Length: 232
Ligand SMILES: O=C(O)[C@H](O)[C@@H](O)[C@H](O)[C@H](O)COP(=O)(O)O
Image (cartoon, rainbow, N blue to C red; front, top):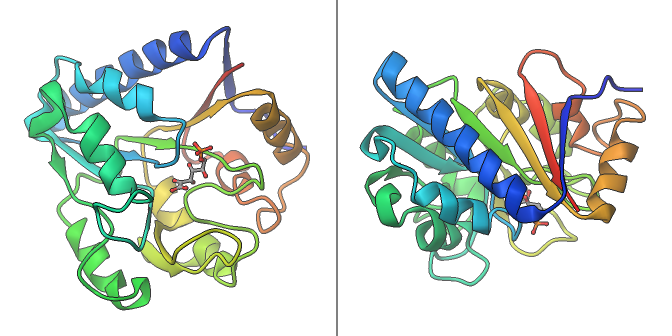
């Protein structure tokens, strides 16, 4: 049994989003005050969109905030499956329009060919990352660490910041930050909504077999603080 992370439960999605947005904004501004700049890693998918909007209105020094993605699908940034598109439409707006965004997709035709450039693009990011916001799929994946993929061992063991993944059961080749990269952060939030995700989270706490449920690689470690934000 994995020792449970800080678990915060909310009655509604909107109260979760309001509190998480406040907390992230405070941590980013505190990082800027302490070190002159801050870094934020966000996930794609559907869960964080309202959180992105709330964050975009926060009165912090966004010009000093560097933003990237935990993972990206290897599609153009205009594509409906692009996580970069979501970030541009929902987060890099309003006060956050001045943030420095570097995505994981680049001009190479495959994620394998684009890995070195993706890593280079993040070279000037403040590290450890100040804040990382992760999602979780119903198969227990986070980032693009898919239990079904050939690259799962590599995702969980490489010392490189990024790697290419071909999930098989999920659409598109991907670029993802590795476990090493994600754990090199000051604070991780796992943002999950709904009873099904709660059941998956509870199942993930049962043991530390991260290849079966990769979210365990985040939950079963003590190096980096993880706060779980859940609402019905
Ligand atoms: O690009 C992605 O798919 C992700 O970053 C992924 O790890 C996501 O966070 C989960 O699949 C949850 O997705 P939902 O929020 O859509 O449930």
